[in-house]
Length: 575
Image 1 (cartoon, one colour):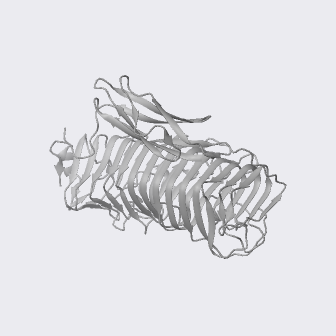
Image 2 (spheres, helix red, strand yellow):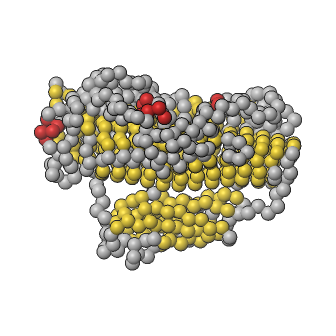
Image 3 (cartoon, one colour):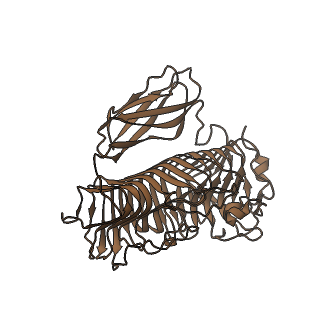
């Protein structure tokens, strides 16, 4: 059944889409916008099983007034106004299934959507969705989004390819909140506030799991704030994220930011092949104690995170930072493999004391000037720098390259640091044990190390690796073939080759790997032929083994009818 023509003709007034109240799309189908300009004069209420097709040359613009009022929310005290209200948008939907925005046209706020709190009739979002399943955003461009170009909360199953968000003069680009099973490829995302951010707030009045997310081939930039960020809203836990091949060209806060402010446990996050420039804080991890959620949360955690093949050029003034909440809530098990950072430098020695910290603030400036020009590590354990990681500066700096204060098992193996103009290159304070081996300054000389209340013990460093599987979810028709990318990274030591096995595939399927075993740090392709009589949802698990280390990663395979992301073979409504 094609979308009701009457429902849409009812909202055409003076050449604009001026839907009022609950006017919207009535039933399943494709709504096509041919080349031309259309005005959304009020909030358009979306329905399930709808494809919004924006043809080349089509633009849907915003208006200065006429939009839904922000709905009441009893949970508004736990996050700011924009995150608490969803109806005040160009496009709104709640509890929708199978919704798509596709094509090559544009949704443009047209300088009418606002970045602050809306007055009567105003909107601050282009797309606002809550509790959705199976959302597709492909090919379209969003401009001038107000507070948010896209705000989704409580969704499951999000797919995006070649999405273009241009809100560098406004505020946030895409906020992905309380959401799982996300696959984003080939995104270009320029925000003024946060570009691509993952959060978990209390706007929907409950704690959500967040995870099973893959972001591949992304180009991100942020004006005032963060390019690729976790938080600050962090009520629910986050796990199983892979970011691969990401270019960041600006961020006046964090390039790669990760904070647990509200009790979230953040784990199993992997950054690979990342290039950053023009970032004030290249990498930041912080556990805070704000705890701004409705379930009286405790203090959260950050653990089991890897950074592999990351290059960053900072513009200052924030040194790369790992900062636990206290000695019992430490950042743990983080590996930096071939992470090479260049910082501005240019400061004098300021001592080695712990800088000030506002535990309720998530921004890089919530911590005072770091006493290290490079890595500042506080309240952390199991922190490993391997594989040619390095830090250097543009201008001479009297601070040490590294200060690690309070923690254990902090290791630098094959690390390079530019020689400080002061008396120390590395300082360890109450770190037991620490290890520095096979490491030099940038001209091959010995690093000058000072240890206080700390003992060096390298011993035999255990070899370990991580493994990931992407995409997190895909749908294949019976008789078809599913392919997944198996990615690996070196966590520590020299794991060597990793032997792969697959389980959980449909009965009768014979999965195969393009490379098996796969060298640690390399990738393989898993191919899963799907029998013609297969149906249902399967959890495909790939297990890798190298020596005594074994790790697994899983993804969802749905066998059924593949929902098209282009207009259906039926007569669409055309404007």
